[in-house]
Image 1 (cartoon, rainbow, N blue to C red):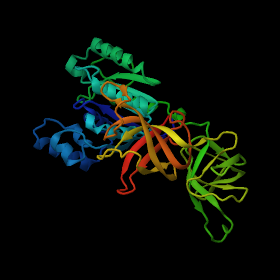
Image 2: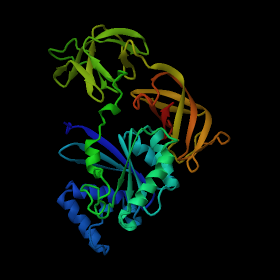
Image 3: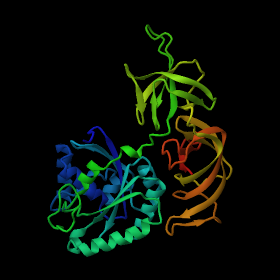
Image 4: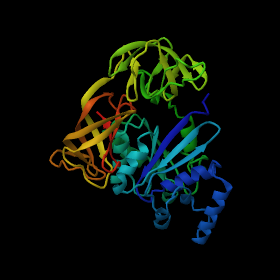
Length: 417
């Protein structure tokens, strides 16, 4: 029995003109997740352009530049729901110069859908997207082999592409990969099973997304509770109430658990867990709750409540896989603000260990200049220790962003390795 309140985030990636926006349009259109006025507007635009049917790509290409050029530039988020599950789709651009946008859209995803044009097979961009998906530790990958109608729905073409992709993914950290032959334009195997490909015995794409097991994607072992704010209501009935509010990043916290507050190291026990006006016995990721402790400890925003027998490692020197997001290159040994969960500190990039050549997926330790869209392993030094986990263990406590203090722009996003 699936929980229809469970939210699945998925991202789409693929080369230019592989049909990502058309696929999402088809998914929304066939699952009847589009408002009538939206549909009417898009039908009119499609007619003006001389299209026979509805141009499904228009459902996601929200920016005017995207509509005019017929390409996706920014990350477009779309929300839809079926009786079985809720979904957030991040439609990410295919062009190489928008690598940073793909990283942004994919960082919180449970599933990456990688589109491959059946006529072209696995190309450079496919390898690049698979590599980024594995780097971001996205737990599930669905490879949609699109435009099957243009290769006569050939099983042989499909099998060859599956073998090609498996050869690429075998060198990466990818746990769960599934392959679906589709035609986004005609709707084959998107929401409804295709009659043109009786040789494919698997489920269509929507059914695969609805039934995919994602509960185990969240780390349930390491209890981590970054404190966002301290609650002191100072009103009748709550005169002595001192709660620590935040979102459970991972694991499960229960009433009576012995906990340690990091970085101070003071220990106490959980007295109560509150959600609105209800008291709970336990809280798990990703719930937002307020916690009270039996002892009066000085706790503020940026501290982390963890189980005493399972602590993150406080560290001022961290190694990070960094994606540079800004137009201006990184300044050597410049100070940046670093944001890790609810903790803000100052930090400096001490060293660029190596850069990834996104085209060849080779490491380059000679070039240490960080420009937009570059991905590199770097060493960062912070002014105070951060309570970190490896990104592969915990995507919340294992990720950071860097902010330029002068412009307040987010300049980089990173995964702790």
